[in-house]
Length: 215
Image (cartoon, rainbow, N blue to C red; front, side):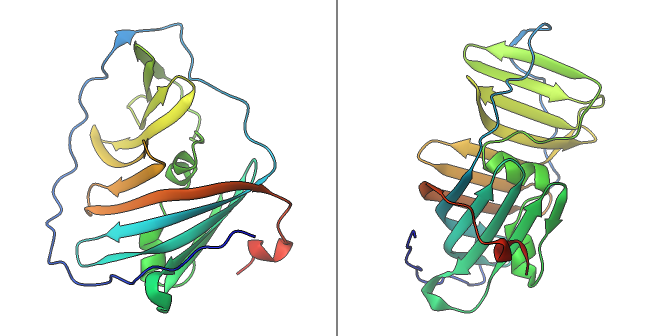
């Protein structure tokens, strides 16, 4: 199986980072495209193991290490986070369908985004059905506001999901962005918490042992 090396632990107070009010959402950019639908590429199938490095920055701490995501498409994923340097700690989460379980320490709960944003980090759009969707296009970039009032803002480049934003009361509450260089970032605007993942490798594998879906 895949191997990875744990990196040095960096868990230290970084001072109080003042959390500010979530920013207001700007108008949706681009040209109106009322006939366009959101891209819906066929969902992946099979099983995949993804190795990544992670860094968490919160108001009172910074931590980093390695992790692994074991994905059984179309609807199940287990995440394990390891603190660097062999230090005790980290966290884990299991997502099966609509059920997301994050047992254990406070740091584990800080490391795992909510269900829709977790799937967005893996490149899939899994959000609740809404009545209204407004779509605008700017070159190869398609953006959409979903819901009335808006609950989600979605950004695709070609058929690839690159950003999902959760909106409440006209303000941006939290978001996930898939950037260049296999980099994924999650930010919770109210708390100021940021989780950055850098993907190291992604391998198709055989089915996982059923024991990984239990804690």
